[in-house]
Amino acid sequence: MIVGGGVVGCATAFFAGRAGLSTVLLEKRPALATLTTPVSSGAFRLQFDNPEEIALVRESVALFDELQDRGHDLELRRQGYLFVATTQDGAAAQAELVARQREWGLDDVELMSGEEARRRFPYLAEGLCGARFRQRDGWLNPRRLSQALAAESAATVLLDREVVGLERQGDRVTGVRLADGVVSAGWVVIAAGPLSAGLAIKAGIDLPIQLVRRHKLVVPDAPQVPGRAPMTIEYETGAHWRPALRGAYGLWTAPAPAEGAREDLPASAEFGFGLLDPRSDHALARVAPFWKEVWETPGLQWWLQAGYYDYTPDRRPLLGPTPVPGLALNTGYSGHGIMGSGGGSRRVIDAITGRIEPRDNPLRPDRPMLERRFDVL
Ligand SMILES: Cc1cc2nc3c(=O)[nH]c(=O)nc-3n(C[C@H](O)[C@H](O)[C@H](O)COP(=O)(O)OP(=O)(O)OC[C@H]3O[C@@H](n4cnc5c(N)ncnc54)[C@H](O)[C@@H]3O)c2cc1C
Image (cartoon, rainbow, N blue to C red; front, top):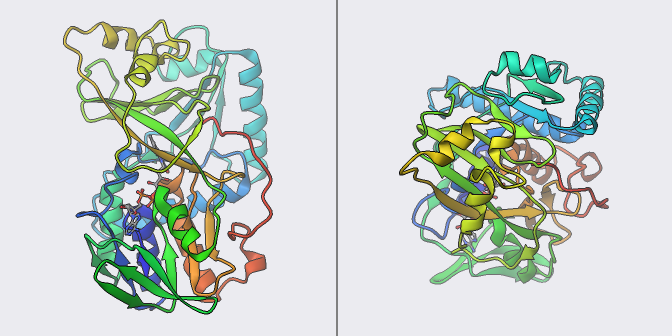
């Protein structure tokens, strides 16, 4: 039994099917992938600062390719991820990271001077200090991915079905409670995105997750945006954008206070101005000056979407069985749930079916966690 029909629940259903498990996916909303998943920019990258996440995303990307090969149009684009540094310290940090990535076997990240980057990507500002770029990073449509995973799973998908409680016999979770009855299951997997902690606590499990509101700026029509550009990130501020629709998506992940879970999350107008207004200290125009022209376009339209990053202390997901028998987790992706969905969900199902032992699952929910700083994205 999988609770939640975002990308993570759908990927769980996919791997449960592959493992031959009889599976039901319960989604409280009237359609799949309508909460956090569609707010994301759908991007994936192997450019991480640790080998575990590189492996996790590498596996997901192989699955995305497989789904495309099987005829699912995920709108997958490999236009790359370009991190640009505006300071010498930033450029040195990029170089150091690329050296470590090579040690971990990620050998196709190109390191460039600011000048080289500008020759390759002429929309960049003058005077940048350095850049790193990986062509095979990219993005896809996260709703299409979720729907493809659900379609390829053998699961029974039930919409408009809210899980309101967990059934227990002694210590063991034996099923879920809906408004109109109880459904039994050998295993219940919580894949409820930002609402996961509210479910887990019903079994006495207090998830170490902090919810932080994040926004996506949608500029649907801006001819100034080069359609073939990569995801372009200012390393120092974390502000970034990528081509989308006939314009772009813009994002920024500044430190922000944790909030309580709510589904009708409002967006803040300030977020849009912070990226678009060239006077802002994290304006997109800092590294890509055409954004000044976009801002000055008469009649420019934009809108904002808001969703949560579900941060764990070490910024990695909670994958696999909990100390409560019959209850497993697939949540806490800390802002990387599209790109982590494939590798993460395969691990959850392998842990449930005993194909991997707890000691071989470094992302098991009861692992000791070291605090890590906020990733730049
Ligand atoms: C602005 C922004 C940008 C992002 N960009 C990226 C990106 O580029 N790349 C990337 O990898 N990640 C990105 N992310 C993160 C990514 O969106 C999430 O990690 C991912 O969508 C989490 O998927 P999920 O299935 O866990 O959660 P959700 O998509 O929130 O799905 C959870 C589902 O569970 C259902 N549910 C909850 N409770 C119940 C219940 N009691 N009964 C039944 N159903 C229930 C909900 O209705 C919902 O449909 C971004 C996030 C944000 C906010």
